[in-house]
Length: 417
Image (cartoon, rainbow, N blue to C red; front, side):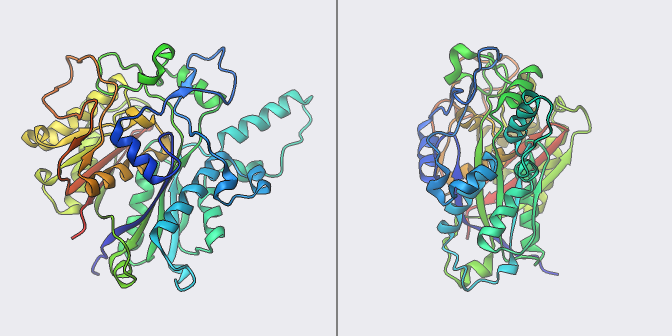
């Protein structure tokens, strides 16, 4: 069986740098920080008082009715908003498409944690009377995001959510890629969505000492590869990509942003939260992706790193890069866009895949902002694209996404030719 080729024909997002794809890309290029003080709840007693929030979002602006808003969690609202932009961008004619051949596979690490928290608080403060909302389950479970998208557009192809912590959307894109190249679908909406900025989301990651508590300098707290990094900065939002079988896209004259070449998925089998110190799982995922893409490590021009701004994680990932790419590690560009967007957990891989696609189409490598002080454990001869975007032709870009539990995802995109 000959595998199909898969291309990307539509993009949509809502994230801390923009409520649409053009604003997101412009702010990436400009090196804008999406961090702000949290304004959704009282952070007086919290160790961390800031995050990268989505700003000025009104769900009714993207066709979600006020009645629906009450019935769906914020993470689903974000997915519906981003998917709407992606579908419009793709110019798919849904009246003529076989909707049984269009599916939705998304990633979400947590799902509706905000809704669950509010229901538990209402129960706790209500005299132990079990009056839970009949919509709680469907607001909370992570699979409802693709479910709502399928109902909105009548897509009847593969439909589910992948949950593998911060690798979730990387694995969702992998599954979507496989569905098309194996002939199970013609078009897949894929990516991820997350809305974790809530008391339990912020409080629990802070207690685990995974998140920055640099409240005095919150705008620059996400500082991957800087000696003074002290943890990631929470982000939120959604990134949706339209994956499409090449001949299907060509037959309708679709605009093609890039091609998906290959993916790799592995486990560290080391620790529930810490990465393998030598990046062994990451190395294996990258190696698998390169093999599937049928390219050499020397063919890669840009890597959008997982780069969370954690003391151990940043070092382990760069060790993996040096081990795989050897001398070429000093010739390609590397950057962590989490320095700007914060960490969108299960949606991180999706918006970072979009950053890779933007680099391919624009020839602009987004920067790693907020760098000030060198860490003696990091080799700065590698081009980490520090503080300012750089221009160079990008033909092939690679995106890493790693999650708690030791989950690793790597996906490779190329210029379509």
